Image (cartoon, rainbow, N blue to C red; front, side, top):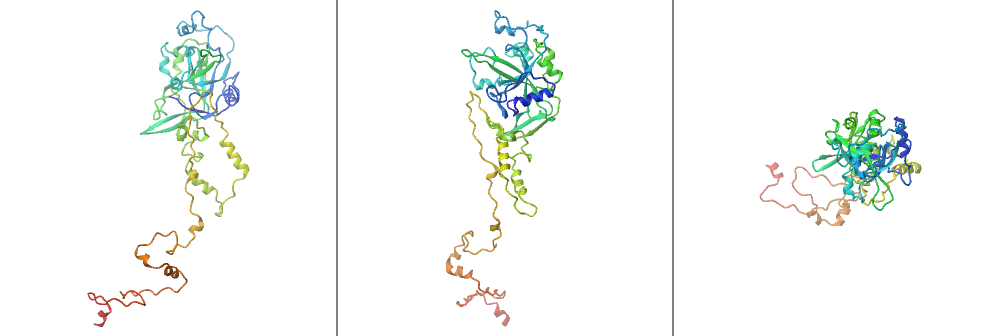
Length: 416
């Protein structure tokens, strides 16, 4: 499945990109304010994203369903194959909520129900029946994003991976859209789903499903969006296949797993030197702050610090009107690691006296020695003479050596 993707771009930026890829955009939502979609590196179900589609009425492509037949009759197979409209097709970008809500829905579904319609399997579209039948014939679209996330199961741990095109282009995923108006409401809600298919060889290790990615500006993409095709066909079904282009797949930060978290680091490899959360960068900072002669470098200027702070806060985190899911903020960073020992501590004499506070408590026998004798021993006096290797008598000027009757002195050996 595809349950999280990245799109931190403004509608104007996406519009410029699509037009450069020979995908005309005649209308687009505003970059900010009412009706603007969300920009996020961690785009989750329930958010409003960008959908590219033919500019058709709310009932989709083709003529309006007959009032006497009712909306449910749109599922009939007798829909016309050509609208008869020979005018030029117009395309637009539209802000829609992720998680398709069918037009016949009477009340706003809860989040659990919405999660069930964030994806649509390609094999569920083969037969002309089911909830997707109307959408696949009249309401096909393209969901635009930079890349998507998938989690790899490693025992009890799930490791998030980011998937993007190797050429750096935006991904154009095949999708379906719909428009619903709940009972007692005057507002219309536009929603979408992402179609999934079997994974290609590059993603088999990660998951058995992946979004259907169509080549940007291709004939296949125009066929998928063609509003004159209002009957499902084998040709349309054949477009739903694994992506045959080259992809990049790599592990990313675990923080992307929390809905509401948002950071540019989420799309950077977790082991990359560019990733601020990479522990290797903590040690690299120390080396970068040293000059060639070993002196500390100057502190960053106020302007540079402000620039960094501005970049970190450049992506706003907006809340949807009906969003009430809480996220626990993560405040721990590698900056909380223990500080290194100061140079003044390292330069202290290695030999320490028993009176120093950082020496472990001496054994019980040593406690018999008075504090005054310890302090006096630390005064600058001539060092005591080294004991003779041939003497087993303890050096004490005031005490008489104790004789050992059982063991003769070693000096008596030389008198013989």
